[in-house]
Length: 277
Image (cartoon, rainbow, N blue to C red; front, side):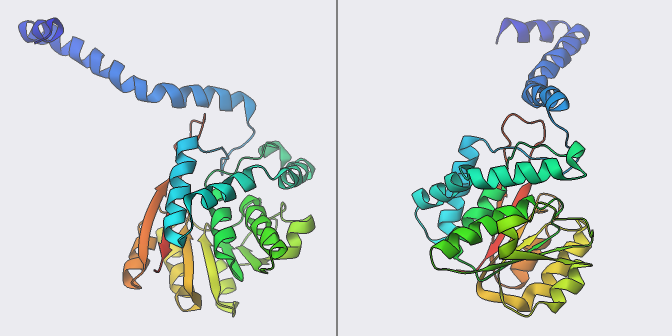
């Protein structure tokens, strides 16, 4: 037994105090990095919600491996897609310019960081979907990522269309220019908008009202609108199990990916992935 442990055993009251302080020191180590990220974020970011960040390198590799297994492509191809979106300077300039011209620029960062959305991009590039649907678009960062993938797909001879839904009539201001040629936004209640869609959905992204009940209602609405090999991404799967329940009910596979942001205080979101073999 170490001297420290012997001292605690011989002095019960003082030992408890020392042990508590020691345990606090051990636990504090887990908060040191997020706290440093928080201090940096407070003085370098304008964001108040829907925080943006890059993923840690290993986290991107894990995501690429997961995508490769789901859609049956090589790991190197999945990584190439992720590197492709991260190196898309035209898209980055578009988003930065549109952000600075927006009335809400004081609450958004001009620096472009995609987080888990690099996975959305990779799925579109790999699947070559005809119809992509995203519910809840906020500024339109995800919309730009998804239409950028559709734009690349068209250059390879595979055309597709993006549909975003949002109840906020001012949402989606980033979806403009060339990227608006590949998609449109349906304003109003997402459930009502989804009910009106007639074309089979190849990729569905749930990112609207984050209540469990509304999320489940979206899945129920699209259940019979999904194409045979459609993939459903749940952007709220770190908070609810509704995509898992939907997958079990419809005999689909389900996996979960947890983001690990780089140099940021936010712990990251979880992405549920529902698919068929």
